[in-house]
Image (cartoon, rainbow, N blue to C red; front, top):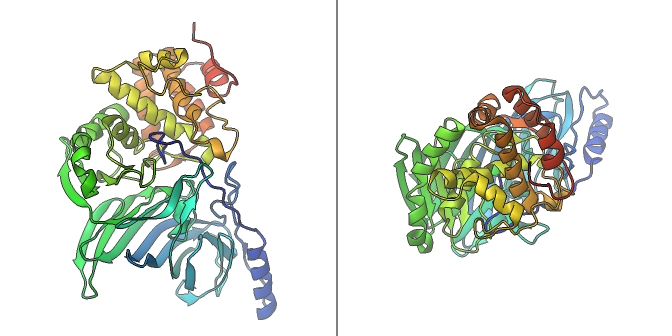
Length: 481
């Protein structure tokens, strides 16, 4: 997915639950104790996402995360300092952060100690002084403990997953809150600096550019990573292990950084050797590569059971093939650069990533996108081994619930929607539309309505039949006449 990929396993997310009253109680108590009027009001403890209503928080936008994480693979203990720079979108007497488990040792806001309490996944913070609307404020949270893996409804894991010789922190859709506090909804993107402190002999790998690698007197090595482009929190990664590291550049000059588990190195080489080619191909088809670096983290087979398009450096659970490499790399444009406004818009991530596979095949002596489209209509698994899936179970723009946002219709019928647009408008207008979509929504968020209106405006074509039948229609669409 623009998250977990369909191969080798479909993903279904975990709901986050948290009461909304804690912030109100805390603010009222504070006002009673001080005897003074409350200038702000509590920020909401959820953003009312259609499928994850308690994910994220209201009242502020995070601009930057500074995470300093020290991890001991032997004990499984994580010690963290998270510094969030945010802007208040309303006057705030209190606000919430999403944090699952772990022990909070202290919180400051604007350098002053802040009161806090925990209820479920919500960390409610009451600053010493109310925050004014549009005020930029800095929150520091110190925390520690043994972070846990989060089990999704399909039994898959996210969050902090311990491996045989390290750990992997991933987050789609809501698992990032298992290893750092934040506003964990894709609509609140921010820049990141992530420092991983691990025992000497281990590698610490995250998103973006490796700014420094420093051996400390405490027997740890600190890896400082910088992501200058905005990132949704579910795309953050923290990987700790004895990886084999390789670096290079694509033919067009994009820096590459790969971290591969030693036992997966040989089998991963054929696909990873083509990563630069894939990145440059995407730049020609979808527009300039949107991030400062590209790469991969390859874990031993079965570590997660799925691949995930973590920003600039996707993670693979076992050696990838080229199709999977294309899929996760395409997410750097679709899902990472242009991120979903809500989890209901997943088809904009996954439909594009699957269609990228079809386009790669078409342009590299494989079946064409038209042949793959027809294969799904006919259930022809000789052309596409996923053609027999239940791709028409529901419309891709309207999954029946949170457990279904990574089901086959989101992926494959989503790709078929894009092919139907191509059939209607022709290649020239279609590829101009795809490049324009990324360019005009670069580093932002968009929903399905944004895309449908943009597609008609840019192509000058009435696409109601595509939307009514393929994107929103129930039942199995008939082949276009």
